[in-house]
Amino acid sequence: MGSKSLIFFALLSYSALAFAEENEGSSSGLVMNFYKDACPQAEDIIREQVKLLYKRHKNTAFSWLRNIFHDCAVESCDASLLLDSTRRMMSEKEMDRSFGLRNFRYLETIKEAVERECPGVVSCADILVLSARDGIVELGGPYIPLKTGRRDGRRSRAEMLEQYLPDHNESMSVVLERFRAIGINTPGVVALLGSHSVGRTHCVKLVHRLYPEVDPVFNPDHIPHMLKKCPDPIPDPKAVQYVRNDRGTPMVLDNNYYRNILDNKGLLLVDHQLATDKRTRPYVVKMAKSQDYFFKEFSRAIAILSENSPLTGTKGEIRKQCNVVNKLH
Image (cartoon, rainbow, N blue to C red; front, side, top):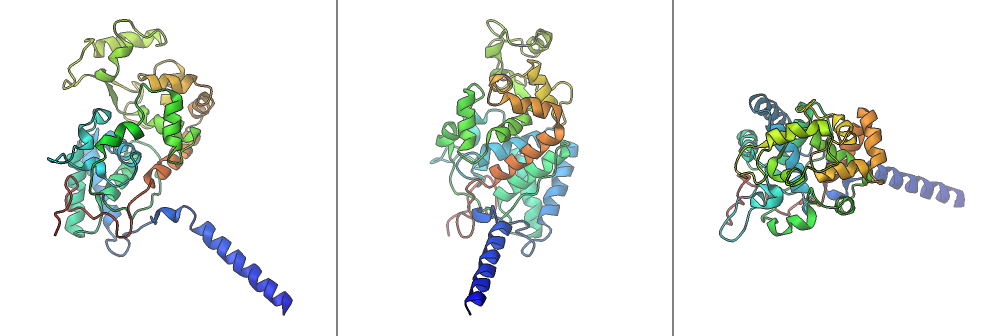
């Protein structure tokens, strides 16, 4: 009897361990293919809309990639970023940390397409995350399996942005600490900043390194181009003046970013610090040599970011429109 009891408890312990391993990472309440029963076409609709919109408006993919960072890094991945200002609430979109964010109307286009198939089922938070995932693929990046089941928040976190989102001029210690707080380690931070491989930097965010004197750390060969693109020491923030982050492959998410910053061509101060700080430089060098390594760490970091304190179950709501909360009944 004693030996049978020991075997039983051993099997029970093994089963519990196997279950825990199988469900590792599910503590967020999210699961793969959450809508398989309630709206089985949801992810296909989102993917097709992303492809269609990217074909018409190439810069949408940059926006979707930025959205996941600006929404999910601020306390919860709940589409609070998408809410418009009201008399009682300032929108996150209007804050300085959100400068340059745009194309929110295309998320609404995706939402409308999903609503036609499954009204009131798929959250804006999941659409925001999945559009980023599919936008990354359109940019030549990896396909990243991401869980779903998020619900939408009912309030903006505009007053919290500076607390959670590191600025491009902050020290590397601050940048690393902000990401560490949500579970992203140093190679993950280095990989996430590889998003600067695509898109552009507005002159407003760059001129302090060009005027009144050019930052001496810049590669001399890169300076004439930046001065041509940003000729004004005090640029009009509403003007479309910018420098492409990567002149070589500006529309491709790749590891060319790391080669650029090692060559002192990083536009933002955080890019320069990433290449020179002793904590991050080894990973920059490794990612510059291996795109596979960059993609592996990038995928892992995006997955962690996308699962940051989501609202699930009965928390929050499923918004009918992504820019406004549902009316209270």
